[in-house]
Figure 1 (cartoon, one colour):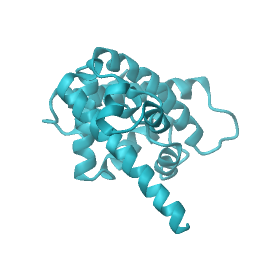
Figure 2 (cartoon, rainbow, N blue to C red):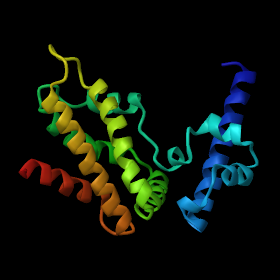
Figure 3 (cartoon, rainbow, N blue to C red):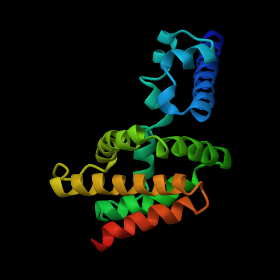
Length: 191
């Protein structure tokens, strides 16, 4: 990477973080619904088009998806002969173990905003479906395409994951996230 592209990348990252920090401060102070993209841009000292160059919407500031690469790496470590639900259940604690203390605190702050905003709680289902597509794509190639049953299982486990995240946020992080998500997964296993 050249010095110019490295400097450009650092500026992009700094702007991205500044927008995120401004949005989180405003959401915490005023509530998610009371904050506009224009207000976030002004607080971050960027234009509205610059905001949209970094985030497709204000929901994307809060509801951050794992990347397809993150999910592929996570699922690559799971035995391919296990059922899909078992692979997802085994991957969750590995995912959480990768988080630093700071990432965990930041995630809790975001999920507290999601949990306290009815529209975001509902919107979480859209993000679950997008993540389900990444999970389906990340599973090791099989002889046949992903079955309808496996697709349903992926979506159910992601809904359970979201339920665990919301319970964690609703409880202000008092209980361990891993336990709450595992309890949600157990409900599926008993079903």
